[in-house]
Image (cartoon, rainbow, N blue to C red):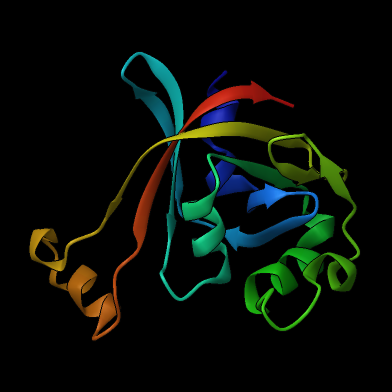
Length: 153
């Protein structure tokens, strides 16, 4: 069980939102797992300028999926290119896996299917570390999304 909490540190991860017909995915390295309101949850962070941001806002479900090192190049592409500009699925070579309410990829070692239960924009005024405030400069901070983990695939 403790192994699942080390996933964000030890594995490459993708955040995906939308359905097979219309979705976007992005590489993430920030995230957390725990319990909120007596539910197992995943917390992820998405900047407003990311294409995935609109998908996270418009959909009730999302996935967080984890990959072995051999998919580093695919996940590097998924994090450095925008789905506004290219078909990231085709370019990465990853195989979309339809989960009905959300998508993941066949190559994932573990996928967490989540239902969005909370979101909030980070507020620079509440950041207690100057380094955190400086991280954003004039840009808008991340939006925090919390999802109940419905299934581990």
